[in-house]
Amino acid sequence: MGKVSTFEILPDEMILHVCQYLRDGEILYSFFNLNSRLNSTIMDFCHHVNLTNLTYKQFKFVALQILPQIGGSIRSFVFNGLWQSIMFSREPTMFSRVKLSLLFPQLHTLILMNFVGGQLNSFLDKITDFFHLGKLDIRSAQVDNSYDSLKAILGANNNRLKSVLFDDDSTRFILTSTNDEETVSYPNIEELTVSLETEQTLGSLFILVPNITRLYVDVDELSSASKRTLENIPSLLHLKDFQLRSLDMQWSLDEIAFVLSKMPFLQRLVLDISTEDKHVVHGEKFIQVLPSSLVEIHLFIMYYLSTSDNETDT
Image (cartoon, rainbow, N blue to C red; front, side, top):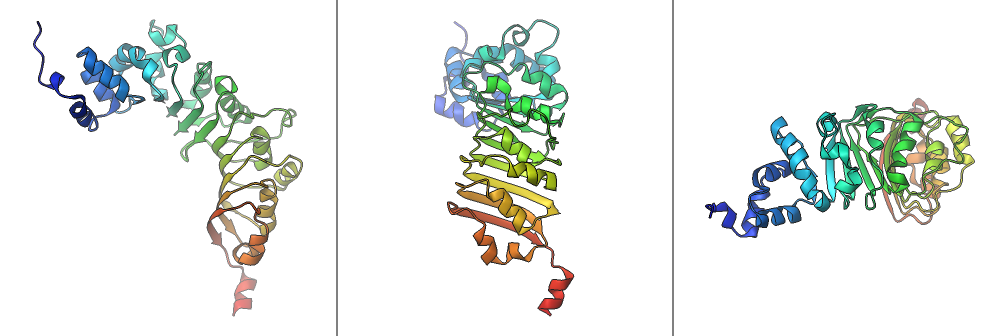
């Protein structure tokens, strides 16, 4: 009978206490396959797997030898674009032979980091037929910023995604007018965080996500063309939570009112904007443009006082 180490006979509670000081990959590399009890404990513990900050040797071993064994327990997984050459190499591996949806059948959340160029579009082809996958969290991704690229992301996993989030370090998308703009939409999307740099800003975005309930958007400009597009689209009847960050343009009260008019049932509003319009900061008129359903509001407004206002105040 093989010698059993002291560590292997420790209670699960103590092992879990030790594991909280280690990264996910370190736990898998160090302890998995020591014995069946530890394997069971680790599989119950590692529902979220993040393999960043491992050495090349550690990552290759965990990714190719251990992940295929525990994939059925993983609910959330961080995938780094730099890993593709290892996990999907020309050499036969489990990842190249078997669909990802079969390796990770319980996956709910997929976090994608450091994708560049066409890597993301290529990887989207592998995100299909996940029954539970509803959230795509994209970080530090500098990818194709076209309208078609955003549509491909929103439609990933056979249009089963409900939440798509881009962080502040990711691409700013350029939405342009297209002939099929009125017919192409993704009613599956309920939550979206995205940055835009476009001439056809909010109108094009609203068309894409008609059933959105939470929308956080960082936008550079709202052109007159965008206003006309917005005027002709239906209201976002499901939208309850809206956050707008736009410090590189000056918003008027009329422009704010125009956007909010498309959100009749809004409950939470966050505005992080710049303005030269005194009516935006002089409460009475601003309150009049708010939806009657609103119950929570957060404002950060940079107000640029005009010369005429200075003279009047004096």
